[in-house]
Amino acid sequence: MLTERQLQIFRAIIDHFTWTVQPVGSKNLLKESDLPYSSATIRNEMSVLEEYGFIEKTHSSSGRVPSEKGYRFYVDYLLKPKKLSKEDRQIIQSVFQADYDEAEEVIQNSASLLSELTSYTSIVLGPNSAVNKLSGFRFVPISRQQAMLILITDQGHVDNHLVTLPIGVTPSDMERTVNILNDRLVGVPLDALETRIEHEVEELLTKHVENAEYMSEILLNTFHRVNKERIYLGGKTNILNQPEFHDIAKIRGFLQLVEAEDVLYDLFRDIPDGVSVKFGRELNNEFMDDLSIITATYRIADERVGGIVLLGPTRMEYSRMLGLVDVFSQDLTTVLTKLYHENQK
Image 1 (cartoon, rainbow, N blue to C red):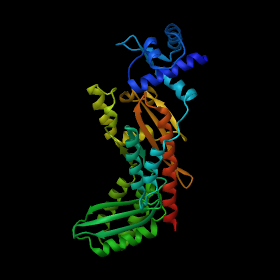
Image 2: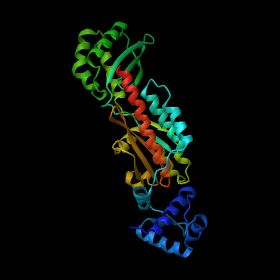
Image 3: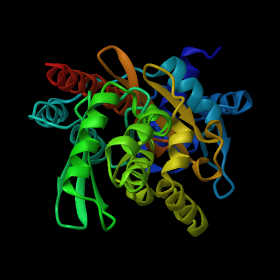
Image 4: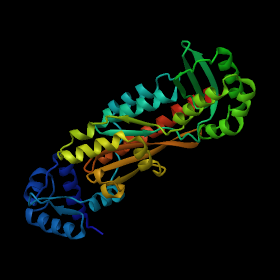
């Protein structure tokens, strides 16, 4: 579609905009690059690139910037991911080679580290509740009116919930409840717990636990919270440091978006397998028009369970960022699978 000369000029425009965030004309492009062409030749080829829709004129400058269509062509056909630097690799290894007891800690650390390495906002979608299964349940009395309800999943996640005990609930009530739950619910997916409580466990609680109604209410409320999909954020406000974010309304809208975990999960839950890129309007959210995302999935024991999202400006350095997201996907899969197998022993 493009000649070799046009490809060289287009790559130079991409590089210029990535690092300067400024439109560029033929004269400045010639000065700042090692293109072996005259200014007139570059200008003519830029006109062709503009006709193709790969670059466009901004309102405030006579120069040109890459268009969303241009970035899509660049990522799909021209981009060559960089190998990670030795420094990046060492930093990543220091996090993923640490000893972990809980999946949640690994996932949160990975979100934080990805944002630190990129200076962008990272989002990790926690394992789907349909994948997690209950492997253990405990009640730990804290006081007469409070107890810690502890759920352990087969994938190494430990969920602690401080609950208030109604007057009349006794240690024996808690002990019988724990015995019933461990007998009936171990191995059940988290997203099925509420249904099993209502259709199976409540009847047993009524028979064997004095304050069955109270205990049932505590359990249903807790399992409802557990069943919510988890979002782990890193560098929540990093993206606001980018020059593209100077509009107050856009800043406010973005902050509202990252605070709405349910909306975020719905926005990114169907990301494809492998590493992929989406741009601005492809995301169908007005607050992300000037942004792009790089996504990847991660697995536990060969089963897809969650996703990684790197959120940055459309002009991000894709060659490095794609490599980082890919490595995080692989390393997170390795560590979580190891935790899973350890919890099966």
